[in-house]
Length: 143
Ligand code: DQA
Image (tube, rainbow, N blue to C red; front, side):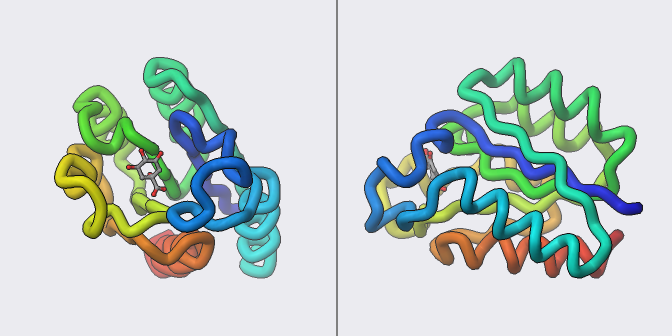
């Protein structure tokens, strides 16, 4: 069975309590269920992981990517400055789609910059949870 990694960066464990205008009202658990259920219709298994710590996310990628075919990642604020996460994503050698719940193009200037997106095949933002479904559809075409 094919499998993908669904990775959430810092503060995404607080979904449901964070600004709903930006991030919607789903909890992280409901978001994971949504993606897992959709993926199972295509016989794809989802391995979900959240951490508030850059190095722990990198450890997870290094450990799990060998046995996965694709990655959906919302790196949270690490998007905007983590070259280490960029390199870890690039090193996996498998396709990755970056997702942001909010419209990062339409907020503070610093949120427009993604240092991780160049390691991904696509970046989707501003579509709340629907962005994850779109990311899954993109990955399905590649894996
Ligand atoms: C986010 C956007 C980031 O700028 C922010 O730091 C987050 C969430 C999003 O999903 O819109 O934590 O990645």
